[in-house]
Image (cartoon, rainbow, N blue to C red; front, top):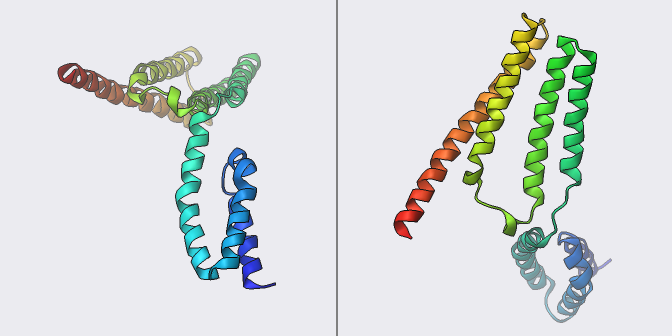
Length: 197
């Protein structure tokens, strides 16, 4: 196998870095262009030019594909089902040693559902994240309220449940802190917009 054939094979593999829709539409034309260039120019020159082209265009094509994609709800629904299942299992079993880990799993699954729902939307539909400060503040408050209510209702926590309770409490406090910081940033950005606009 000659150097030109190896270069062309490597370029065919590199074209797979593009998003699938772009690759299906333009991939054969890109390979044909590089084939013509390899035949007419020195291989090193074609390699240098295509490497620069790939480094510049692959990320931008992925960004364009991400911005124009339609929203999907599969992953958030899966995480929501996991959260609901964890709550049902925890309530059904009724033991505090099972309830607290199930609540922790539910909180984590709901958090992942919210994050994946946000990431699934195209970039053009997204609002600034500072506008969501109240969701974090409310979510953290709910997590802490559930933790406090559960520990008060059961009295003393079993030995293995302390770790889960501590992680859940720290998660609630982190969410509240993030909500406060984003709320302050949101209020200051609104104040800046009103003074400049």
